[in-house]
Length: 65
Image (tube, rainbow, N blue to C red; front, side):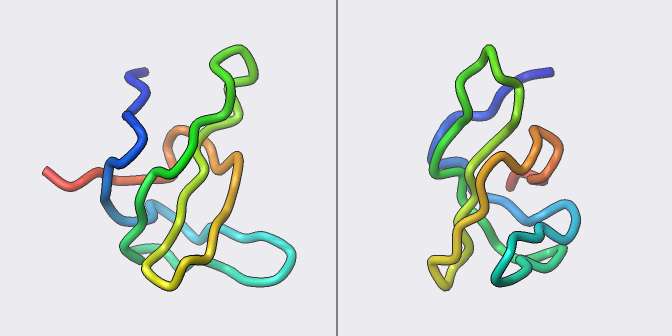
């Protein structure tokens, strides 16, 4: 699996839940961080409102073309 670089934009591939909110599937997101490669836990994604979810999985974003 190819790991996308920080700054990549796209949409959430599925609902991304954390303790205080959910970024809904289809919401515009940007990759703002990547878990260390050895951990394989995924991306940190930030939506347009500045809400951030970490360790989302590498399949959690559908990048813009």
